[in-house]
Image (cartoon, rainbow, N blue to C red):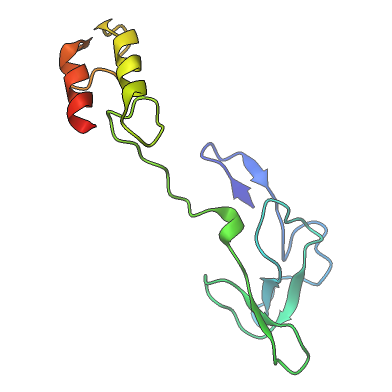
Length: 141
């Protein structure tokens, strides 16, 4: 089961012991392994193997594709993304990845006293967007 920050279920439950899981029940002598790449499309009918002989203990699952174990497949987690938030420099006001004239334009449009507690164009912390903030952008270019 996957829950969001407010504990609301956003996916699942899936796998061993969940409704619709038809391969048996949880036991101390078996491993339930997902034998496909993780994605937003995993469901109760995904390729689970309840006869697995070993666990990868948190690493991508691996399983034999052929009866003689000559081909081993490993899960590919690339569809899930790397989980790293893209960070922008404070002077990159338009989040383009480049500090340029677009950021100066935003700063000029925001000029004057900050009315909100969060004031991204106030780069020098003076609570006013002014020439000092434009200067910071120019220094960052």
